[in-house]
Length: 462
Image (tube, rainbow, N blue to C red):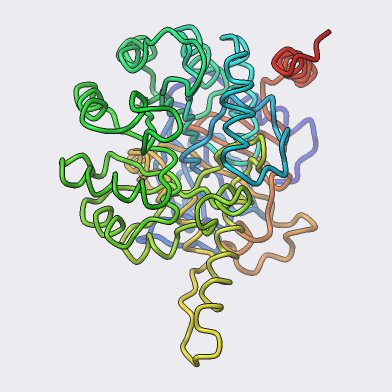
């Protein structure tokens, strides 16, 4: 792993060679597969064949796997699946931490969706979405669901989709019309065009909607009409702003109408009633939690609904939500949900003598990888280091100052690591980050573009 700079560059050149049959053998790592059949290998190898994982085992070199393969010694590292972000409004990335202390959903809506969103041109959509996707890759997120709810024109949508494609991330474009301001009214019909035009191996589509009409009216609200559109297109649906009693009533109505199921994702699911959770569990509907969003902004109960989900038989995915007020990395989400749930579990039984039902670091990593992939319909493609799945994976340095010595690999990923420890990121077998740096990114140009776009949106460009 610790090669001279020249040797690392030579190795990178071989890894980036344009050859669909290229084989790569990563050897000597502790491998956290997140596949229950394989578990954690204290020392093992992983073979990539083209886009896919061809083998995982304790000593593939002895079995001849190194033949005709580019061999990368990753001794001293943890190999883990790439993280899956099940919900992020990527177009807002120029406004990162513009309102870090926002403590009310209404204030966020007024400032961002009502104030700034109508000012976005198609190129601003491109810049924000690309910036968000590159930040995700840098932090080990290999799959990003972009809940793109500023689709004012077809050109706005095209720009957002192209940004995902240009970064090389595994992207899910979840399209929705804007909450406020003028727009062409092309959504949801335009989703059919997008899906046809941008058919690609790394890109999939979903329909995005809101749970209730309280914020933006009935046209953006999930119900029979939008369910019919999704069914005709053969895409899943991601439903945002699933909060409290109004959303609970909506969930029960969707159950009555047969509009729930594994291809429907409810985002947040904060403050839902017991009956609503029963409906979610009975129908196999998936859930995307946004731990820091619920807690920091104070959405409904402000408590991420991990206990409620697990009680209903639902293992949730995790998401970032809005970078205007929140951290953009999965490490923060994992630690937040781990800490909040365990605090809540202990507090619930304090003074009673009963044993608290705590989740583990393995649970949290499962939420951030395998369950995230299942939540957005990609369980057969990514989320674990399983033979036959695509090679979306991270090489995390375990001998860095904040991680050494390595004792528990899962604990190290969840509680010890951050973006600086991610040495290498593969997406579908292609290297996107190497030696701690994103590949193919002109940072000065990106910085200037983001700053100029922000200034125009905020009206500070003179």
